[in-house]
Length: 124
Image 1 (cartoon, one colour):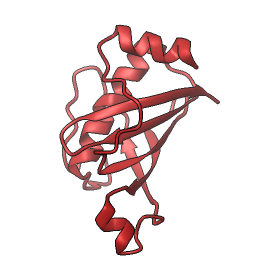
Image 2: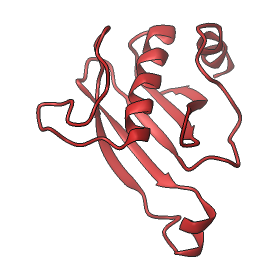
Image 3: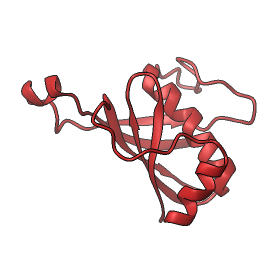
C-alpha cells in the first residue's frame, strides 16, 4: 500500500491524511479495462452530521478520462451530470492510473471543496 502511495506522491498527486476540512469523502473502485469507475461518496461536514445525512452514501458512475480529456458535466454517453467534486475526482483517478498503471484498485479520497486529495490506494 505504501509503495502505491509513494508512486503517486512522486508523480505530483496531492496525497494527504484524512482531513478535518473535507466536505466529501469516499472510495473509488477502479477496474482494469472499464469505461466508468464506481465511486461511493458521502458528505462529511458537521451540518450533514447534524441533519442526519452523514451516513447517506451516494453512488456515482464516473467516466474514465482519456489522456487529454477534461471532466465536465455530462461527459459520458448518458449525459450524467457530475458535481464539481466528481470532476476533480475524475482527474485524480486519471493521475493515479498514470502513476500506478491500469489495475484493479480501491482508492480512498477526500475533497475539501477546492482540491481532491488521495488518502490511500489498495490493490484489490
